[in-house]
Image 1 (cartoon, one colour):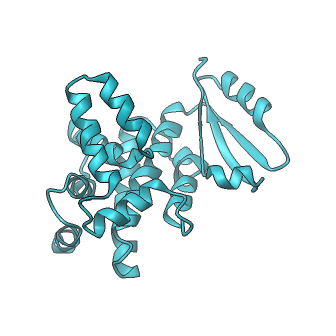
Image 2: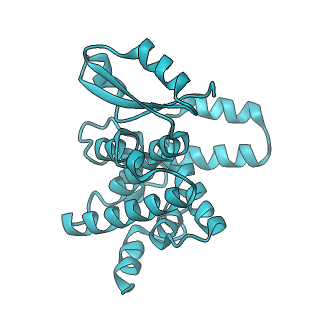
Image 3: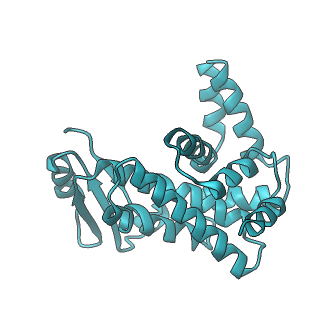
Amino acid sequence: EQLCVLTGPSFARGMLQNDHTAVIAASEGGVAARTTRDCLVSDTFRVDVSDDVVGAAYGGAFKNVLGVCSGLLEYASANTKAAITCEVWRELVKLAGACGASMDTLMGPAGLGDVLLSVSDKAGSSRNVTFGQRLAEGDQNVALGKGLAHIERAIDENNHGSVEGIIGELPVVEGFFTIRTLSQLGKQKEVEVPTLHMLSDVVSRTITVHEMVDKFFAVQ
C-alpha cells in the first residue's frame, strides 16, 4: 500500500521549463497515490490518482517499446510506420490486459499519453527513439547498442562492479530490455504478440528492420 507508481508523458527538459504536464500516480487503495499528488501538484503539473498499479506500471513501460519501434521505422514511409506501430501498441495492450491492467489506465497518461510523447519526439529527448534510429542505420559502433551488450554480459556474469561502471557511462535505454522482457512475458502468458517478437529479434540483431517489415506484411 506504500508503493506508488508515478508515470506519464513528462520529458525532464520540458518540466524544467515549466511546460504544462499531466502524469498519473497509482497505488493500491490510492492512499499513497493521493499523498504523492498532494506533494507534487502545481499550476503546471497535474497528477491524476489511480489504484491500478499494474496498469500504470505496464503503461509506463510501453513508451520504451514504442519509442524504439518509432526510431527503427524513422526512415520507413509514414504508412508503414503507422501500420507497424499501431499493431505493436495493440499487442501490448492485449498483453497488459492479460496481466490484469485496466484499459482505462492504458488509454490515459500512463499508457497512450506516454506513447504519444515518445513517438512524436523531434528534439532528441527520447533515448529510446534515438537508439532505434541508430540501430536502423546499422551503426555497429554506436555507444548505445555496443554498451548495452556489455551491460548484458556483466549482468549474466553477476559482476555488479562492471554493471555500475558501464551504466555510469551510458544514457539509459530502457526499451532494449523492455522489448525482450515483454516478448518473453507474451510467451509465458500464451498471448499472441508476433509483431512484438519480431521487434525483439530486431533489437537482438537477429533480423534487420527491413526483414521485420517484410515479415509483418507477409502475414495475412
